[in-house]
Image (cartoon, rainbow, N blue to C red; front, side, top):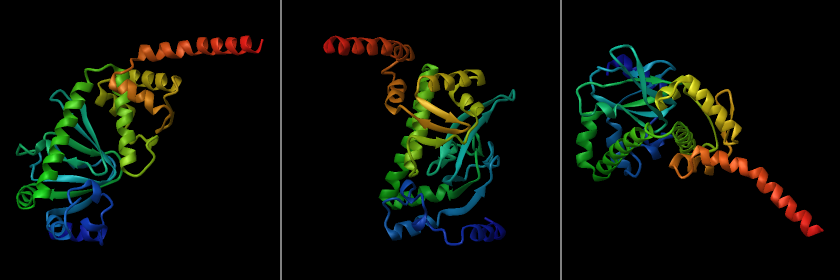
Length: 272
């Protein structure tokens, strides 16, 4: 890092350390001793802000660092040779960026800020070397890498599911992320556009609009501009897991008026 970059980082983050960082419990220093945390902090090459629409890194950049999202959110995208774009993943506070390029000399995707965000840049080689010296750090590195692989497998399987199941899983994931960040699990804002969500889930804009309307009419969510309120988490869980299909849910909704009439007839009969 150049002297000017170092001076800028100190002005933007004058008293920020790993020990007082707001995402420490979601980051590598979690469970490390003060001495180990101090060693880890030496790996932080730079802390920087990435404004909305700017790149944390570009495809084909040299892969020498990994990044931790301190604040904000990002999307990783892959552009095909024909100009088409796929949204590979969304990343939020505490998540890692750049892991997909760990086994390559260059990054394979573009990573773009969805809002004004902050990231910490870590030396990848330095992290490898330090993890060999600190067993607890080694365990955390492998655990995070394993989680990333599991997440990619889940996303691969998700693309084979029906659109309602995909969208339910996506909403529950955002709900869990909101809770992890200390916010309400049933209310959160969408930092990504509907187009981005559609590209991530393999759906067109028209399909996304129909899905949102279906979920609202079924009483599963309420949407106001980009704010989402989850009204029936348990039903979303059933849809996401495949325990309930959309057809079964619609049938249940159709049977409700009949059940209410039966209950009313019983009360009238008993009163008589």
